[in-house]
Length: 172
Image (cartoon, rainbow, N blue to C red; front, top):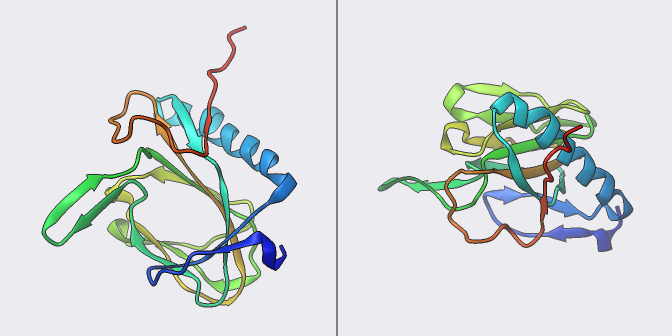
């Protein structure tokens, strides 16, 4: 990447940068579409209607994302409630030239070490609350996206602006 292809969004709970993939975006979109439609949907017994445009994230030393759920929020005095139309979360790890950066699934006391090419999927709700632990050296890259499963509750009347429809498979 170059400095003009990095988007910085400072927030104390999320220290990461978005990298614009340029001409590779269409290939990334196709890969994520296949992951949701051909791999995950049959295993979950659903049909995903759309997915959010995949984003490439760059975590440098100190990069992290504190505990969160991808579709829900909660506070001490309020139980989890849905704020985004996300049912499936997807991560694809791109490299291993870093230390730290594990993913912690807090409700399961499970720590996942990212490896290049590893595809991780899970429901987007609070049961799968997770954190990207700080990268302690090097740079970690990952692709992230989320999908909406047809027939699930909605909080918005339309898909997000940069969502990509998943066409049903053609019958032969």
